[in-house]
Length: 183
Image 1 (cartoon, helix red, strand yellow):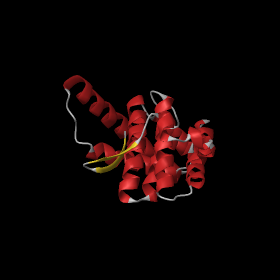
Image 2: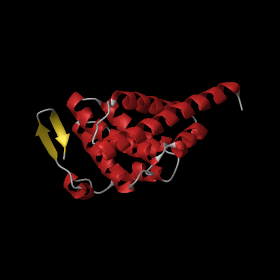
Image 3: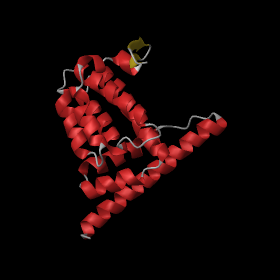
């Protein structure tokens, strides 16, 4: 293996290992003690893993997806939902892309693939609200995905309108004290 590529692979492995550990610790603290740990370290390493995933070749992306534990995968699904909300609040197409990258990284392999599909629906609606070319944004994320979940991402914005309605996905838009949200 090329020395530069070996270093890139090791750095990605370290970031994934840290995300796995932090995600498991946060889940354990909440489930066993009702404690919510500071999300900042997990958010920081999540962003690092997503950068490594976007910048990596197919081998690196495959390695990242395969090394994620179930807690980290569920974290990425939750992160995608947060990005759908924040994209609208901040009027940011970049955050739609970040959410889609999180789902491309997790690749429908979390605790329940239906959760990933709901987040695709939220990201689709955020993209439409922002006037983003949803088909192009979803295609870019699909191109990064390492398994057959790529087709689910790619085809999502091509569904008939009645299958894209938020109510079909059990969600709706709401305004909270913090601003726009999905419930």
